[in-house]
Image 1 (tube, rainbow, N blue to C red):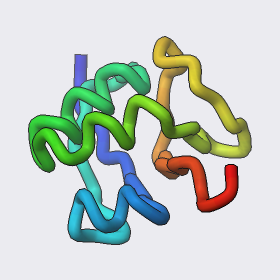
Image 2: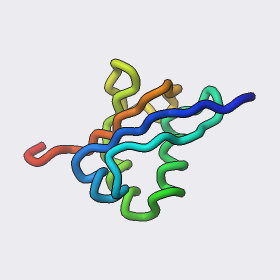
Image 3: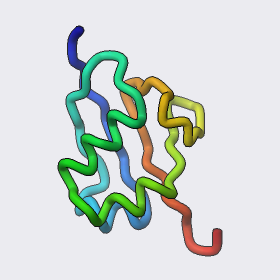
Image 4: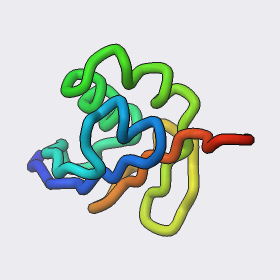
Length: 84
């Protein structure tokens, strides 16, 4: 099983918690959103946990909250924006 790079882009409160707008992370080939969330938490710590818990994720062209979803080359972390 190999590894691949994924571009993770952060928005709104996720930028504040991660202190960056985007980064490239190395994940195992076939990694899921759950795997990616664990990696993000290990890199950015406790401030990211409540944000990741309520976020939706854009994987390719699909908006999802399914943590079993296999990720591709880019994932956007989309926390709820002001007003909803």
